[in-house]
Image 1 (cartoon, rainbow, N blue to C red):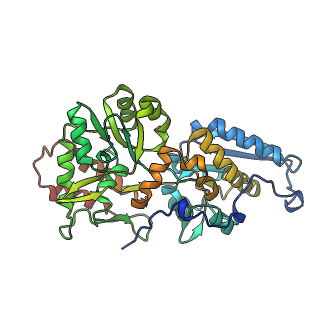
Image 2 (image 1 turned 90 degrees about the vertical axis):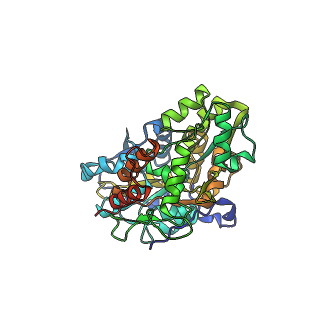
Image 3 (image 1 turned 180 degrees about the vertical axis):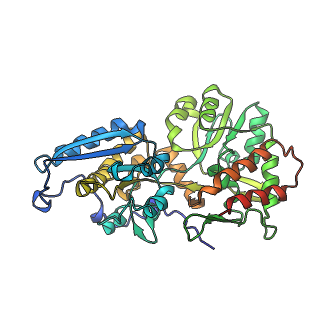
Length: 413
């Protein structure tokens, strides 16, 4: 059985030597091979909302290396979550440098889209260990860590909840119901649903083939059985203080006052703070009652990475640009402009990052977070299972039957 590594975070890492940390200093001219072409044409893919930031970073890169090459660098918006699908459509003519979510790494490596990173040891020294692990396959580094914030935690309005209240989901649901409000979480996505199974001893993960899954969520043995989790979910779903809604629904509920707490990520931190003002709070996830026990809710952790296309016609310059985008200074700039948590050790340990409520909550949750490594067959069976639970089990089937059906789909070849 595969054992998942837990996240180690900056407060334990401040003693790391900083000599290996990346800076925005260009490599001296004499160390750069003279290219045998007049113009370096590079295409960069990144999130649409990062366009302004990336254009600034690219402009600085061209300025730093002016005189060493003539650049024609084009930015094209491309969702990080669907980057692999777009790249696989025409790999040889795809982007030279691209941002992608770490759960796509295995597919990209298997397809030959990424080569091992040449300066791997420097990257390892400069970034959080778990971010490096997320960018590696079999201990070989294939991409450069960019962010360490693609996880989720609890947002809550301090006008309704005390520090004691937010420790327990049961207590929060009761308070929300008393005020005619809701606590939200998205159960249509297996990304969030994992939180209810993750610390129970029930497991899910990727087999050594890198494609199929193993899953014991339907187990009838152990201190917590699969049916214990399913029953707890059924109880939560039926509570008047609970609502399952997607990202847009969460934000709309926060803004119109119907949602006073919810499980979500850093990408909505600015909007939530604007809506709640002085009431804005963030914390690790609470516990929930399962099989007569209080279970700490777990979470999937995720990382944004920068890859260099192995088919790039100008791979040397593409690699330099990738290093530039992920450097310490540009990760600090990304945090300042976009609020995204750095993977770089020095940037992540800065006072500005450590004092941001959403980032602090993510770090607090890190003790109970695990890298997301599941195959494609994971998502639909989980969504089908939760749809039944949210509807109150209208089919009348036993919870064990529902769990067995879900697991059969998850582990299907």
